Each structure stands twice: as C-alpha cells, then as structure tokens.
Image 1 (cartoon, rainbow, N blue to C red):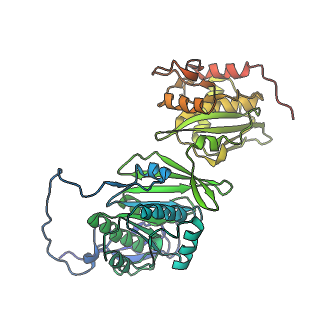
Image 2: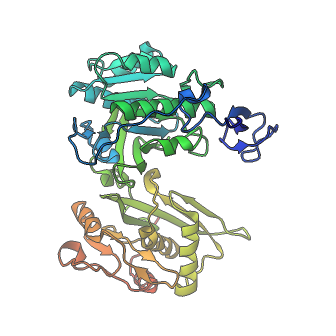
Image 3: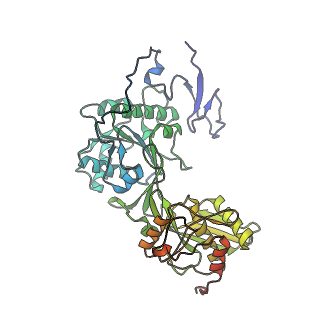
Length: 465
C-alpha cells in the first residue's frame, strides 16, 4: 500500500503546500496552513479516510432510455428561470453567491414557496438562522402558508439522514455552504477542508437521487465566492447575485451553467415585500436620464438573448495634475484606454490634459466590446459640450485602426430601442437586412472619424446652467 503523503492546505485561499509555514506564499495570510492527508479531498469520498477496500463493479447503461421525470423544474419566477436556463435541472447542484444582505435568502425563499405551491417537495435547511428567524422572513414575504419543509442544521450527515426519510425531495436549499461541517473532516466549519468535503457529500447525494440542490455561498471582499475555487468546479451552475447599495434593483448573473447559456441575467427590484421581477430592465436603467446633458449616450447592449438599453455617462474636464486621472465605473479600464488612444491617434481628439470619468448609469456592468462606439460618442460629446440626440442609440466595436466593426444581434438591439421610443441609431454596417424601422435610416460610419465629425459638426447649443 502506498504511503500516505501529508500536505498543508491554506484555509484562506486553498493553496497546497508541501510543508508547513507560518505564512501562505499565495495569499500572504499568517497561520492558515492546516495539515491534510492526500487520501481525502476531491474524489476521496467518505470511505477514503478509512482502510482501503476492494472496488465493486458499477452497472453500465446506454444513452437511450426513459426519463422518469421532467428534466427541469420551473419555478414560475420568470427572471430566475431565465438565469438558470429554464429552471432547476434534476440531479444538479447550483451555487448562488452574493454580498451579505444582497437578497440571496430572500430570492431562494420566494423560489421555495413558489415550487412548494406547485406541488414539489422542497426542503429548506438554514445553517445561519434559527427556525423562528426563517419564519419571520417567510411572513414578511407572504410565503408562510407555502408547504416548505424547514430545518436549522449544520451537520452534513444529519441533513442527509433527514431528507432521506419519506419521499425524495425535488429541491434542497442549503443556506449556506460555509456553515456546514462533516464528520470526515477535523477542521472547523468554514475552512477550505470542511467546505470542500461538505460540498462533495451534498453533490454526491444530488447525483445519486436526482434531487436538485441549491447551495448558498458567501463572497470575499474581492467579489469571489469564499472558500476553494474547486467548489465552483464541482457544481453544475454558478449564479452571482449582484447589486449596488444605493440602488433598489438586483441582477442575477450566470457565470457557469452546464445545462444552459452562461450569459443570461435576471433582473429584480428589491422592495419591503421581497424581490419583484423586472420584465423590461431597459426602462429601469433609463428611468432618470437627462436628455439635454452632454456626455450621455444610450448603449444598446445584449445580455444573452435579452437586449438591454443603458446610459453611458462621460465627463471630460481639464486636469490640474501632471498625469490626468481616469476613473471608470461599470466598464473595463483597459478598454477605455484603448478608445482614448484611438480617438487621439486617428481622430485628433486630445485627452492628454483632461481628466476622464466614465460611468455606466444605475451601477450596471458592461462586458461586451459593442459598447466602444457609445463610449466614444459620450467622450466626444462631453469634450465638445454638445449634447447627443436624445432619441439615438449607439453600438459597435472599434478596432485599433479606427474602423467601426459589426457586432452580433443588431436586429434585436434595434427592436428594443424602437420599442422604447428611440428613432435614430448609430451602428456599424450590418450584414443582415435592416430595411424597416430605425435601422433603415441609421447612421453607419465606416471609421470612427465619421462619428467624431458628425458630433462636432452638429449645431446644438451648449446647455445653460
């Protein structure tokens, strides 16, 4: 039998060390290395810590065959179903992360109540709150009458023994994974070893029984789910619940999904009665825009299959500093530097003596390069103090040569803009046929210089005040 090798795991970041040290080389934290044998961990299973046994044959089957139940369990909450790809997949494990107080428990309580009212067996296990506290939240949300089975427990073996009684549950919600602990690991709850072993036991239960498991995860100050990243690799889907403290809406963003798209979002609005679905997020993001202010451009973006219109705000002001400041909220800083360089090199627009501030309205975060054209328009508008047309949307990617490159889903972006009352568009030359609506008269610059000339040559007066 091979000799068991000892390794040391950092309880803060999960880095493996061959020998003990007072300080972790990866994250810099002190006194976080804990001894662990290589027989445990991923793939080890509960029996790996005991004496080894002879393997047993596993039954093989074919790809074809009957499926007992429907492959997905729809919650009836449209925004949640959109983010998950149509509902919870049976036998899957889903991880939901988010900042403290963002609304993770509220969302899952509403989902549990909706599923229970549809006849599904739902088990809600809280490791952070007592049963009375969970009942108070249910009463506030108007979900106290839903037949949800509730428990307050943190031991994994006790939880699995409890839900194994009676009919197999359709959904098991565990809030949160950082509070669970298992007998096969000796470290404290919340450590890397306990989180990994607990998640492995829960996921193994989901795969063997066909019950869908939802795990709640805390996030670190860097915005990542706390604990080892291997937990995100073990589960089938990872959702992040995002939101700004000064705004009342929340975004449920899919970052991993083995059974659906990974670029969908669900939008909710927080109220005293819980989370309310936002069917048209474009109206939410454009609700407080000023039509006459320079430096504001409306970007027609895409989140998965959903078009979203959001306002991009830019402020270009003379800088008293030797190195002008660049402040960005909601967009990529490297992308802004590229757009500024293209404007200076190919369009003759100088920003070397100006501070540049860029903000995506409402705390929204943009990741697609199609926002390049809207950002450039907002920057030029602010620098020249000329307001852009209030009924115009912008989208398109800018290359380093100054060319405006086409982007996908142009027709869906234009339809969303037209539905909200916009009558003009600035976009790349589209490959598909856009002969109707605002696409027929859209301005399609081949180079970024054409857009700069169009903005600078407008006769709009500078707004007073």
